[in-house]
Image 1 (cartoon, rainbow, N blue to C red):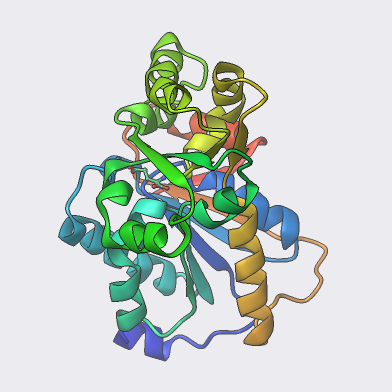
Image 2: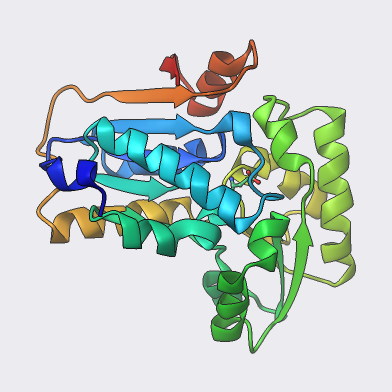
Length: 271
Ligand code: DGL
């Protein structure tokens, strides 16, 4: 536990901190805000260091510590790691280091295995997630009775970071990465990276409506609600809540990308 963390009193009215390697975790933030509208939210996009998917465990861990220290200094009562890659690489180290509740996420292999009708599921994720010990354990636990076809989507996170949800480059990558899954006959695809829900409609159009797409943003929001409730940290009903964004992106359109993905004008600061 850091000194800062131990000194910081947590109360129900403190904000919840949410972060990702970049803007992808805003897909999770939207679920959190929809389920828990009375919570003040603070989102950090570590876009300068995106993608995490090709970084070492030690590099990702170091970034997670920098961001968690920052969020804790802002007085957050809980942290949501809105990133599958960061969760796989760093959540154990974060939980060992900090005392506040830390909620992570993992690709939805379990619900996909329950949903598939033909027993063939696909997982789209970063190479970091797919190579992790956590993902191997997930397959061991829930992927035994189904065929799991995995596909690393190199370059897709970068397109979404640039705000290119419909560009030819984005669509070409989606086609390239979905085809091997279709060739294997998947009927269910897990969106195993928080950036991908922002191109869900394009993925659906390419794979066809007979293929189900599953992501975990809603489950993460429910898990957060459960943890806050258990700890007596759920915010009281309030008329005005704030959702604030921080980014270290160097791009001129950083605020515009965040607002597009969030869906409305937003307070965006640089860290
Ligand atoms: N959005 C992240 C995830 O859920 C990671 C993207 C990346 O930085 O590679 O895995």
